[in-house]
Length: 190
Image (cartoon, rainbow, N blue to C red; front, top):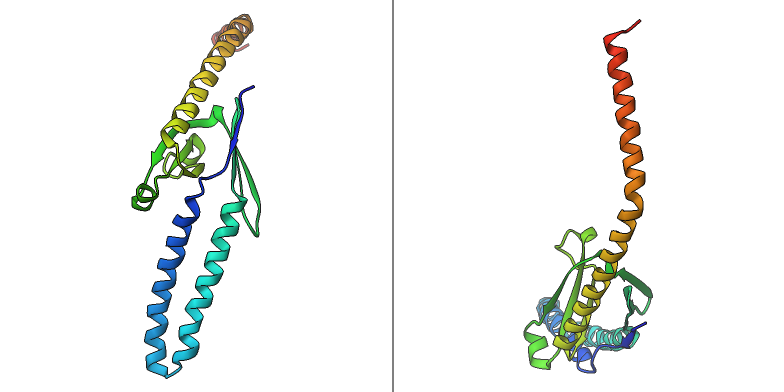
């Protein structure tokens, strides 16, 4: 059984920090406007700094909680600080995998692998493996796992269809006999 376990690259927290800092800058600008209007500059300037500290600590804790596991049958993602989640995505349900790199990802040399299933409608990924440095290698590995899994599935389905074929034929013959009896009954109702 081929399995790999890994975590996001050490550059991923910096992407989270950039998001925390940009959110804090927005709140800082908002609170500066309130502070100037209400003459409470010291308190309202301190509040965004508290928000920034909590955001940076939260981003660090979140990064340390993430782990990925890929085996022959499924992808497992574990993440969460306050609410810990473990998500299993069976390979039999995967319809598409997508590589994404936004501007921050390209600057940091990382990216994300999105895994889509039929259940999500193809719009929202079922799961995202974020903060991956060797993204092309991971994409190739998962694509190979999918091809291998689907080849195994098609061989199993062929065997199952061969076994089920006599059963299907017996059911079909029974349905034809029922149809014939019903048509005879309609021709001679009494």
